[in-house]
Length: 317
Image 1 (cartoon, rainbow, N blue to C red):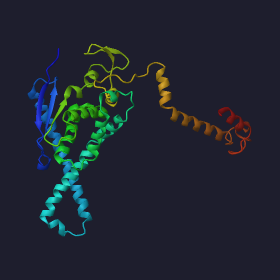
Image 2 (cartoon, one colour):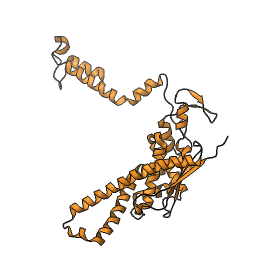
Image 3 (cartoon, rainbow, N blue to C red):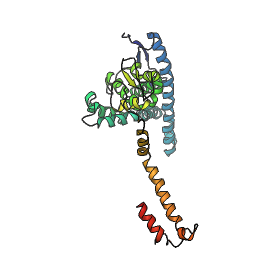
Image 4 (cartoon, rainbow, N blue to C red):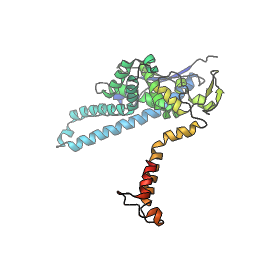
């Protein structure tokens, strides 16, 4: 039976006036019982993340002012009230640009990676590569965009991370969902009041399956009627890299003798280093005079081997 999603929304109102833009965040979910419950959960998460993000912006403003004060040759300019007011606005805008880029750097990395996907990739079928590159540019080159817009874009990701809880372990999946949230809100180009919708069901996709079944070696009947192997966080994250709308199993864990093969493949470098060290120690021992005369004596020097040392080199070559 198809459940009707419940909706809750909140208007983003930071304490700093310059960061207020009448933007709203909406949460929809079929897991919660009512719109009131949706609104309550959204309010708790958004209020906390708004306060945290504001503190980070204020700290960045303080850092910018400290650097400017250190570089000023004269303190007279600081006493000019008109100049100080202008500097305050510029400091806040610059600080917000830095925090915005810092918060969304993972999203930018995901956009750049996915936009360079090969022709056969699922990302080519469901996403527009030009839009991905444009969004990446809008984040990295944000100096002309208003601070209130930058604040709410960073806040949306923070709220998604807070509501998603364990989804913090899957940054690529979060970036995939964030891209669609931005796109549904008109992209990163609309400068007016904007509503951002977070789909809690999509955000928790994968966590529900993990709660029911996590064994990657056995199949279990899931709520969708299919018999599937157990998921882990790598599968959820990889679904974001592969631009899959729904989370699915993307990696088959090795079983039986393939575990040994997989172990050797994964640790072949340290294993070979240990073997080389063993060979070197054996070669040194054959000239160490620590054993009997035949074994460790009369075998030449390190660079001019004789007898057993020569035989040893031929055996291990």
